[in-house]
Image 1 (cartoon, rainbow, N blue to C red):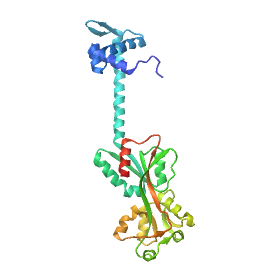
Image 2 (image 1 turned 30 degrees about the vertical axis):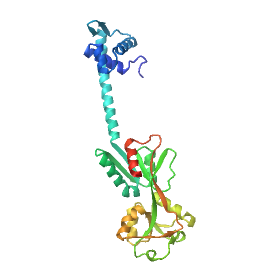
Image 3 (image 1 turned 90 degrees about the horizontal axis):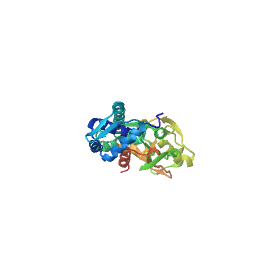
Image 4 (image 1 turned 180 degrees about the horizontal axis):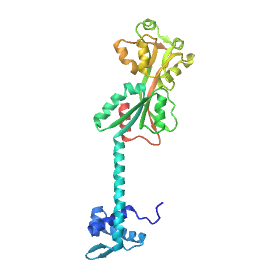
Amino acid sequence: MLPHDTPELAALDLLCSVARLGSLGQVAQRHHVSQPAVSMRMSQLERKLGLHLLDRDQSGTRLTPDGERVVAWSQRVVGEAEALMAAVEGLRAQRRSRLRVAASFTVADQLVPGWLATLDGAMPDLSVTVEVSNSAGVLERVLDGTVDLGFVEGRVDPPSAVATAAVRDDRLAVVADPAHPWARRATPVTGDELAATELAVREPGSGTREVLEGALAPFGGLRSRLELGSTEAILAAARAGRGPVVLSLLAVASDLAAGRLVEIPTSGLDLGRVLRAAWLAERGLSPLATRLLEIAGS
């Protein structure tokens, strides 16, 4: 613990300037303060230290022997303080140009690359790291402070420590390969039919799975025959004729456009959802995270 009579760094910095310049007037100009203010700070410093540091006369200001010793020590202290603040500013600059993001699989695959391309176009020196996880994993990264901003899907119920904002609407689509019998039927698939069908689904904690489970709850719940840890793996199963799957319309758009899969109309099912950004409420958003959120919501 520092003694109560430890002088302020600013006063020691002024004393070092007096030693270099030998004039209170020049010191005042250098530090952008008035000469009386410099004189007052030097008097206060002498009283605090209990030492006579300066001799003043019409020819200027000179250090006393005690003043010379205090200046020698002060130069080391002030130099270390300057080094400290330079290092701190380096950290600030690094934080201003670094962004840590976590995103759920659908958002990471379909949306984040475009958002980051827009951000990078405006800030080419930006350094970004993106972690990909399911929505539950993203919220964990946000909560433990390892990312600045997270993006989740599904009907999440985040902890009170996490703030969220809607980014865009999305919906799940039932899709199958063109040879599947549902691809040729004339009527929509009902909730009862989908609930009775064994599906390839994402793992627990996935936002896609949470929405699907919620939609099928009134019809007896979800039946799964295969759990896969990525959207691409489920798409591969659907393309291979392993049965219908339920995924974000964002994730299946290219397969639908290419004719590899077809969308199956449904009836009586609520498959809509909102994609959300999440961040630690007490920390708030950095300028970079704020800009990314603006891009995501535009």
